[in-house]
Length: 196
Image (tube, rainbow, N blue to C red; front, side, top):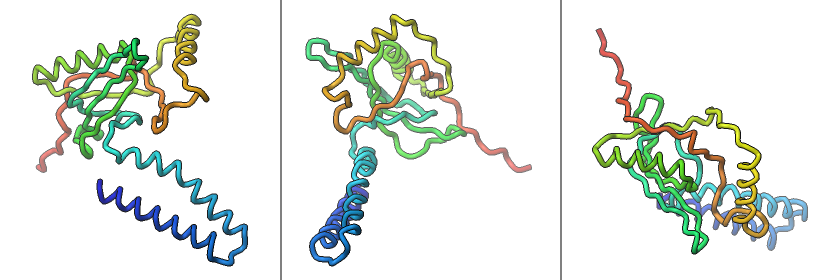
């Protein structure tokens, strides 16, 4: 992790020095100088989002489609201070044969009452010694919302929106519905059959 961050820092210092050389000391045509500047500036947003995965904070990206839940923390909304609730999950991604993939990772999801209930039940089972496996089914058909529920959702979003309508810096927004998430007892990994 530290090597990756140092490598990115060194690479950007090299790119910045090269760009400074092109702009100040070279006798290139102004069109090439402009293209180099535009290319360097265009790489800033993708790099910002990529480095976000390395920063050690819970990921605000989508959670894995199959995972083993190790633990969770539920932070309920604080209406007095105007803070939104959050759910922090510590998950181990699983492959198609239920083997762990990579290292465990922390994720952050927006708080909802349905999610709080599901996570609380899963935490209770973990406290009793059960291994809990979760899946996210993005294909699951969500129940149709009534016009009144949609109006309330739009009103809540407009009240909580920041000036300019954007999320806070460094936060990515993705569509997550608690109904897509299911928990159950962890399945054993698929082992190869013995040779005859």
